[in-house]
Length: 486
Image (cartoon, rainbow, N blue to C red):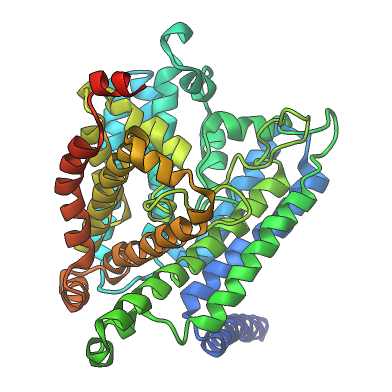
């Protein structure tokens, strides 16, 4: 009788577990459907916002505590988030982290370790893209894994730099170089930190260790006064989230592929692409701002002091300033998601100096970024366009700077609003043009849309690429003539 009762009890417990799991799945499905989103997208948003209670717990109970406790907390919470979103597929990140630790320990501070890390981590990521790729944007384990890949490559580079003579390193490399030997727990805490595991931002191992050791503070001996700065980024993120939620049913990339879009006048097709290109960033900007707020709340966002002594909290910013959409040049927002600019520049672009050609270094860096995002042709086209835009913009800036006539015109105050309007129109139109390939992924889709507007972006910038040198030659006098004029 006892064994029978125990069996019945076990059956009831198992059934309750199944029902509870089914209820949770059903609830998430219903909520996601009511919001017009997928269940995976909802899980992602919930996970990102979970960073705030985790950060508050860390501030109140773990700040200035033993470092191993903090590493354990970051590892456990990060693994929990990974399981909540991707289930048993969290083993991908675990495997790469453990193997990376072994590479550092077995190969030491050698160029072999750096190259092995780069090849293995990128190969694993690209294999993941290959075996999980579809024609749509899917939230799967490869999404946080691309963040982890760059983080582990950076870890290997910094560990390698730590074995060099400090005088041979740049000030930036000295800042990131790892002098000690990180333990597996430290690497795991760094990799799974809940405020950055899913969508970034990126930060160096040294910066993370400063957080754990209680060094990222604006007032010595106290918990950082970062609540208000964190709430500012959170509120801005919520603003973009609400905007995206309200507008997403009405402004979609799917409409670009419809006959109705093709049947509209050329000017309408261009304007729709411009508006869509501006709007499509909202979902990315939301994630970046919310996670940045989490990092600020923990103290990880601390970035020293301004000249007036005010604390700066932008160490983990994917974009600068109060307006994440503001771009100084045409290529600005296209570059926002590719990777955190400072660390990407340090680990990839600046390491290609030995090539002796800035354009070649930049081209190879953007090729890496395209592959880092995925294997779809749309990524390659997007970053190819960015490379073209950067070169043309550099030529145009040089022309305006060196031409006396254009310099005088650019300095006329009355014409500044007109210049701004033209610049922003070009900026956002070709932002949308580049993002079309980025968001539609496959060649049959982005090619269809590009045909509908007659490859406007490629024709515009390729024409400028060939024409601007001749304009420069005609409008910029030789130095001898310029001296006579003076």
